[in-house]
Amino acid sequence: MSSRFLVNQFNAWRESGIDMVLATVIHTEGSTYSKAGRQILVRADGQHAGLVSGGCLEGDLAEHARSVIESGLPQRVTYDMRDAADDLWGIGLGCNGLMQILVQPLSPANNWEPFAAIAALLTSRTEATAALVTQSDAHSLQAGSLYIACDGQDWSGAGPAPARLPPAQELQTALPTELSLDHEGGQCALLVWPLRPWPRLLVLGAGPDALPVVNIARALGWEITVADHRPDYFTARDFRAADAIAVVHPDKLAQDVNLAEYSAVIVMSHHFETDRAYLGQLSAFEHRYTGVLGPAARKARLLDELGLGATEFGQRLRGPVGLDIGADNPESIALAILSELQSVLAASNRVSK
View 1 (cartoon, helix red, strand yellow):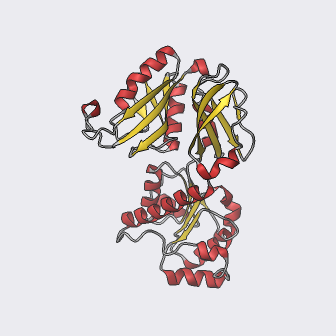
View 2 (cartoon, rainbow, N blue to C red; view 1 turned 90 degrees about the vertical axis):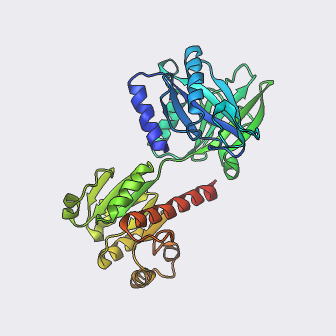
View 3 (cartoon, rainbow, N blue to C red; view 1 turned 135 degrees about the horizontal axis):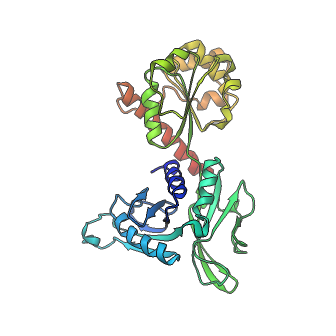
């Protein structure tokens, strides 16, 4: 489950006053379905949002959820699947790894923290670094305490952060990471990981081949805007999976749409002059992914007419878009495009650490 769907489910359960737990993967060894920093929500009745395994461990986590909700105290749970027989829990997980999970209560009694703070950051599209106390024998520091650093600022949380917690910017190249610190005569362990909002995708073109792009991106939990200069394209097709649609003038795209808000842009109007107008304005922005549909020769002509072929924008503009997976229909082409886009976004996340 994407972070967007997780936040949406959290908001729905919180509005209904349903107690739940936040389960955070805090340490792994070997081959595991999830890595440190993955979070899911679990209710006492067993319903859960997100996965830490392929559905194998969530039932057992529900048992811990009931105990944590009742006691109001966090628990540290370990699943060791490294036995060669691998018949733990009687279901043969086959992961051959170890996973430690911190399970902590979310309820009106604690203002749904710490996930309320995480949800607010993700919803506001704020990139941040999170530090979760996973274990502590210091009297003033409890397991489950969360500290946040935004835009390289100091750590903030419910109380003073551990004095030896390094500045967030010094940790970026190693995230996620586990830290062990002295704190007021005691020892504490923390997991530090990046909080990144879900991607925002701008699709420039509302032709029939844009529909599967929008539908797959929606299933991935991305936020999607579709823009086109032809209003009838929107009435002819069902773009309900998009978060927004916009009728734009090609030469005024930057006025009609806030281009700085998007992680990625796919240009697919199938109209040469329109694509040229779009690319001319997109060149002023450094999106993590910009691609234009069509053969390489068409992309080269677009860039030459704009005088952008030798520029940094011309070098990073993708076209033809998509991975070479033998795509030959709108659905498989959409899959190829979004697979490449996902790969680029994941790579840029690693580089930006």
